[in-house]
Amino acid sequence: MTPDADAQRKIVNRLRRARGQLDAVITAVETGGRCRDVVTQLAAVSSALDKAGFAIVSTAMRDCIADPDQAAEAEDGLTTEELQKLFLMLA
Image (cartoon, one colour):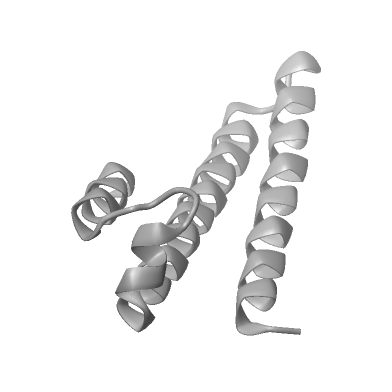
């Protein structure tokens, strides 16, 4: 497995875990779950999504630093400034 494929697999796994946690939050709200449990689970979802976002941006940054010319020509063509803005959106 290539480093990019490994990073993508980890990100997808984190997002799937967050989706499962969000499903649990929805079920808890629908069934009148305890406030503390719902908020705790919701915080876990939020954290998982944040971590996935940071992983996506850091992977793009790593690619940009490793080969700036290829990164600039890539399909999404993110510049360093755009990557910085994406990172700050998550902060």
